[in-house]
Length: 451
Image 1 (spheres, rainbow, N blue to C red):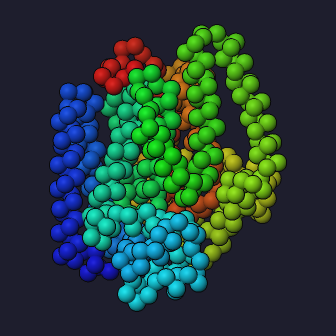
Image 2: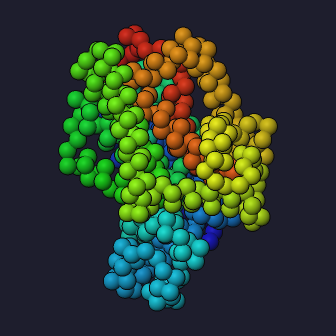
Image 3: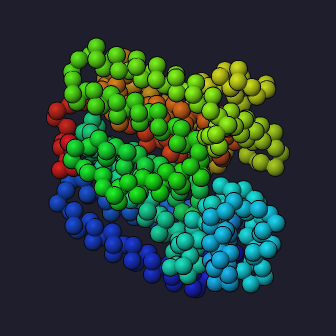
């Protein structure tokens, strides 16, 4: 594996693509260099590329392989399958994997994909996506790593621009939270499922908010981006769709009412109406569960319970664990576990629970989040004033609902700290932004992008 990843051809192609990426990035920076917030553009690109390389070193030398190299092996096998039998390659792209077909379509010329990747549709879907990169990276692991890292930098940049457009926190704070959180850049980088999930999530959110931004028109390209990344999210983590739609609906509805009326009564009435509609939608959701497939709520809860028990009891999963106090998995126990699960997703591992360098880094971030939480509760006018501030801003309204929904899912299912720090990474930028206690001020510096 080392000979393939760090062979002469792989390194040469990787360096060539790194040069291409940097040229493209510098050209874009020069085109928009007159905008003040673009001073963070190249640092963001370099930061992502550096952490992508660190991510590679961690998995290859520290873990001795793992998910990322298995995804890459599967992608290379698919590339070879294309040249061996294009029809079989297309069939693999658009069908659900079946173990019997693995040995019918693949052979000694193509190599056989890792069986544990092939038999899991979500993981095999990751290999399918990365196989598309292999055609212009000549099966170079490093080149693919750098390309996906640059795409990740563009996704996080979109989030950064979206946040500063609302002008509720200073630009440099927004940059730290959206571009430079270390664990997000370590675990949501390179060739991994988590990278694809974060990229898709950020682009979907950015495009959704574009529909309600008078300064930004979402054309056919934006709609296509929204559809493609929603499709990826649906196949990789269906619950993400559930986790972002309700907060988006609440945020946009509140924003529309607020833009057209300053009436507190009207806004409160709208929120009550949203709650009624939401309860009715939940009722319909459960009544039509048989036709929802991957979005079936009962199926999701059952899957979450299975994953939770697997991580909690399977001796093959090593590493420190945390306990939610669940004696058995049922609806009542899951409801009882909500506070502990959310706390785990937001703040754990605590610094004293960290048993490795990577967990220590996450523990330090947790200390910062705890400090921000204290400030949220007692600074800037206190809890109620900060909640009122959140209620007046569409993005903050979306963020707080999203981190609570997704935080519970992550905290409940992870159980292992090593898994938790990876799964919770997508919510960290949104959580930090929500907790930042800066009061909205007309004196905040306006960027050209700002509204």
